[in-house]
Image 1: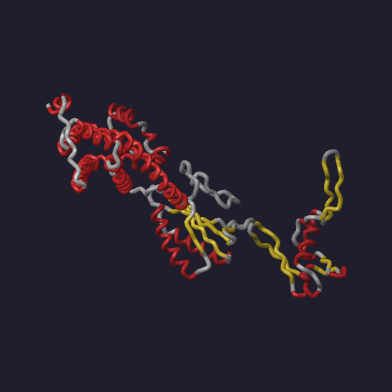
Image 2: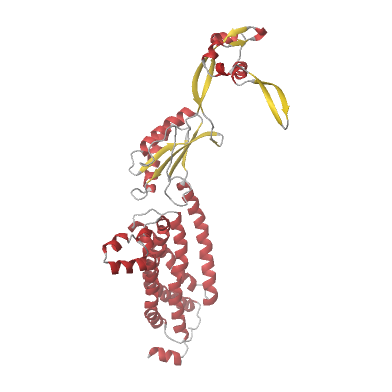
Length: 429
């Protein structure tokens, strides 16, 4: 901005420094019937947005308009039979011209326009000396029937549901300011402001609207994902209850993703939701590994409690390493290693660059764009892993107890245990 400086004649010069940006972080739409009321409210809202640090490029969708000559009839014009439409038509004929003939020259047509000479059309004083034809052919001086003034008019009028619409937009420095907090504070201010303007409606547009639409779509996507995961687990396990036991870690994975955003002081965005959808498919892997191991031990005749203890112990290292390697692999996207790499000795810094990437790419635009996804997946996996090691074994035993209680209520005989085979004996050793 400082290098470019001010540009003469430029009314607006926005700067955008975000990849794949489709809308403004702050976009507030006002709709009403009175343009003056909308303009007054927009000025108050823009003044309020200016009180937030990190909010800049505050503006609205109301253009400054195009310069034009505005005509206003005097009371005497009505008595002489001069209307606004007739006056405007004659002024247009005098300055823009009236087509009287077309001449064909080869393949082109030349329009012949009848109007004032060029020097007279360049001088606004000619309008004051112009004579206007009234009813009956009477010619009257322009100054007698009308007044002319230079003003501005809207080049376009935006309407939403047949109501005049005006948008207040602003940009936010997301490194220092959370757009969600700005929108929350602005929403409270606008709600109080609109209490005295019942005919004006307002709503959030831009990124807020896009995130709301993404969250709504994410709900349906999550529902289909859960149905697919349940179906894929129920078929090989041949059980209706065990898929639910495996999927119980999914909510905790989402909780871990949210906690990760809180630790990094980052708002949940649409990309964060994509990461949460991805983590639902990742966190069930650990549960499947543990439940499958316990089922195999149960098939070999081991008691439920012993099978859960042995299965959790035998799969502890695999589950923990899977989540840790996922988290470590996402660390270059979640953290800035440029300061650490530059402070290390040359040999160590070269090794860190080899592992985590070049310094210049540590805080690149691409990494910032993918940071919400990496946080959602990394912290979701870590948090869900701890839950898997504690909650899944407890749920397995709880389902076994419920099964025993159900069989006791129905007076069914208990399930016979299989005799441990050679595989079981070697496992016990």
